[in-house]
Image (cartoon, rainbow over all chains, first blue to last red; front, top):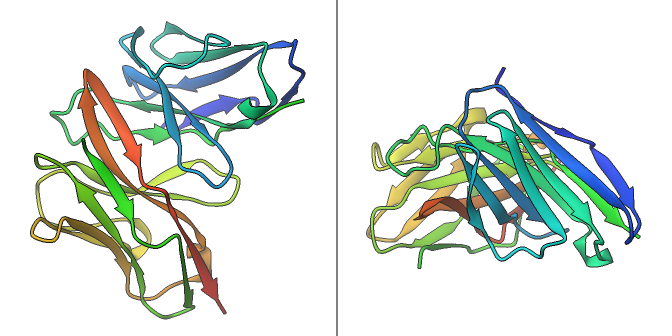
Length: 117
Length: 114
């Protein structure tokens, strides 16, 4: 299995809703990432998990709450979002987060497109 | 700080003609560089990577890129464009700040004319 699977593919939510995005990989990768991509813009890093511990939080608002329950799963919990949070949310994984190996290439999922009304 | 600059926001070529997508990098040490492609409403797919081995890197779907330290460039080329190559292309540099981060260029939209 060489894929990163994201669900749901599309999500529409109101500003008072609580929802979650899910990401799963079975490649034995120990690093997982959340990126946010606005329309016609490049992806921007939100969070990095390494061995199920949060390594990087790019000053993301607390209405986004990541969770890594095990090495194969990554969730992004959403609460009280704003319309400007509408975007494509991309999950990725890699062997590890270190620089030493050329094998640390990120594999991306197809994304979850979020619309906040 | 490490960064990449994609020199063209949009490139348009005819089917069967060569493709050149330009990328310059800024780095205080030998960088790890990547090209990713994103088809409409899809995720990102790795085309190729440079990690200080051979300077000419071959990727998938006939693409290749050459790392030129003297010019701080990592341009993406393909000898003959196909309609299926129409997509957004991102030049990416890997930054290590505790953990690895990918820093993306602004993207180049490639249009293929029949």
